[in-house]
Image (cartoon, rainbow, N blue to C red; front, side, top):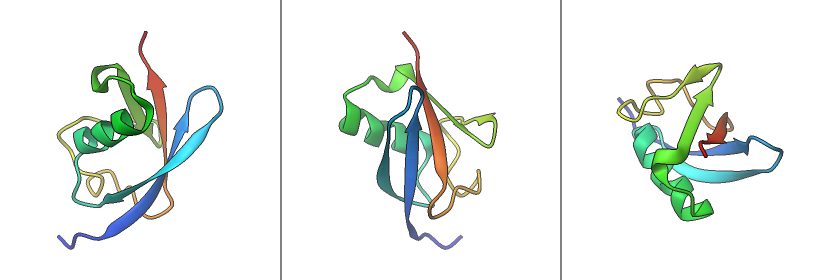
Length: 78
C-alpha cells in the first residue's frame, strides 16, 4: 500500500468543522489522538463516522477509503 499525505475535514456534530493533515496509513485511533490535541477532548469520548459507518480504532483511513478532502463526522459522548 502506498502511503500518502491527505487533508481531511472533521465535522463536529453541532455545526463547526476543522481540517487535519493525516496519512492514508494512519489508524482511526491515530486520528482520534490528533483530534484530542486539536480540541482537548478525550479519545474515549470521540465517535467518528464516515459514510454512515462507525469507524473502529484499529483500521486505517485507507481501509475506510478516506481520501483527500473527505469529511469525517465527530460526535462526543458525555
